[in-house]
Length: 170
Image (cartoon, rainbow, N blue to C red):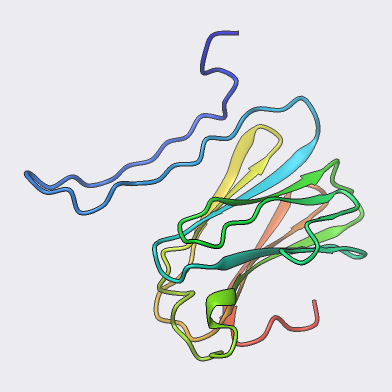
């Protein structure tokens, strides 16, 4: 294998203004694997400092308080801004629905806060060894929970993209 081919290709762009560097883009590089997996990578800006990934299935809920359960793993938990924070579903079940949320833990007591929606949060969804989607939070929405998407039948993505004050019963 040629050096570099062991990673999933990523395309991105950024603007560089003549004579000015206003920010340095951050990119997460994901290694290819030889097993069935779904990986979710959360990245965000400097504020808020602590966004949390939550993945729920019919029998499991993985987050910072329960990092491994069944076939769900919170591989990386970042509490100091930017991320990445990654969740992996190993051998996803065709009969299960996986619901992915982002929670603004930094504003847990302020459910009307705009911090989550103004965080520049970006989710990269990888199914197998392919990028299946990139999701960006919509700015200026009140709430501390972002229900990004659900995954059904191992690879059917149902985009929800809803920022709310509570996670709900899902």
